[in-house]
Length: 410
Image (cartoon, rainbow, N blue to C red; front, side, top):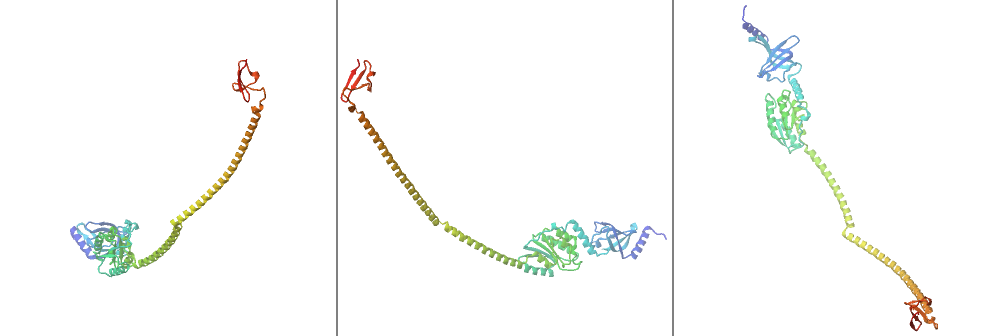
């Protein structure tokens, strides 16, 4: 039987595709190419051989994880032959990780990727405000989770205002809805944004395990709380967000202060304040009493009294001193007077004695008493001279008690 190449390839194609309409292959991925058209081209291998594979865009969009060389996977698909080149390849309809679910594998894969990028680092976390005033909530409206949150918020801190953003929370388009609402809220200068929904299966919560939502949370400028599902549900959004709440209700407990605790705190502060004020007032009262005493002690009246007393004492001291001085001076004057009198008496006696002596000498030397008959006193130039002292031509005077005569010595 003679056939052309094309006919042979067509016959092979018909046989292969009819016998391998749906097959399940477990193998290791060796090479992967993500085409710009959205298709994925890759190859799989085992110990003995390799096989080229392709996954068209329609199925690739539903793939939960990224294909990488070295992954062990289970491929659900069909064999197909490309007639022009006589090549056959496995067309994948669905791919799951070998030994683990595709969602769990995708979760671990994205978690590892974002961890390496630093999305979970504590230094990238923004601090929640202590007393938020404006809070945006991104969730499905209405929902039981939202009702619980608002009920708790009204009891804990009724001063806060909430701004609601209705969003899809599950399904293929949910991640785009969440990202859109998150970007809108981030532009409005809210104090906090809360992304929340109630519990569900891993598939129901998958929106919050996507790269798109993780990027939007990481790039937001507003602090974000991720409050998805129940306490056991830990999602990628919980790791990336600035704060994880185990439940929607827990988000309000984390975000809002408890007004009752503040009332208790205010009561305690009031008691402390009252006690402090009472202590201060008592202390100030004692200070005023002491100041009053000091004022009374140092008042002007007392100052005058003290000054008058000082003046009285000074006057007394002065008088005493003056009296003492006068007394000493009187004693001194009396003593001086006695000395003066004694000196005067002494001088008088002395002069009297001198006078008596002079008188006696006068009496003794009185010429009248000394005069004898025939005797005269010879003076020359007013001085007494002896007779043998005279020379020829001297002019002399001869005196007695009654008569004086002049003579020339010849």
